[in-house]
Length: 119
Image (cartoon, rainbow, N blue to C red):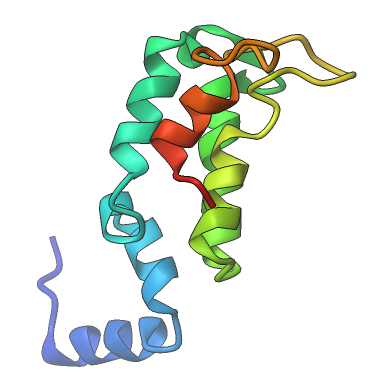
């Protein structure tokens, strides 16, 4: 194995210096640093079986988290990123992956608001 040198450390530091705080946290998978509600929202999505639904090239949960990551990397407001994390959770015209019932008060929009916030 080749030992890292101070020059290697300097090269790495300059290579990532241009990255935003958001991108650095995403690369380190420190999602809670970007949104303190992330774990709670993902927990609700897991309990509603989003990780068990196939969607595109993985699970529906992986897709939702991927959308959230893109929005965070683009420095969108937290409410926009959270909306991306639950988008299509009521289902849509293209896929039927309803995790929440939009017509139901307690199980629908109120449940999403409870975990994502009123914004």
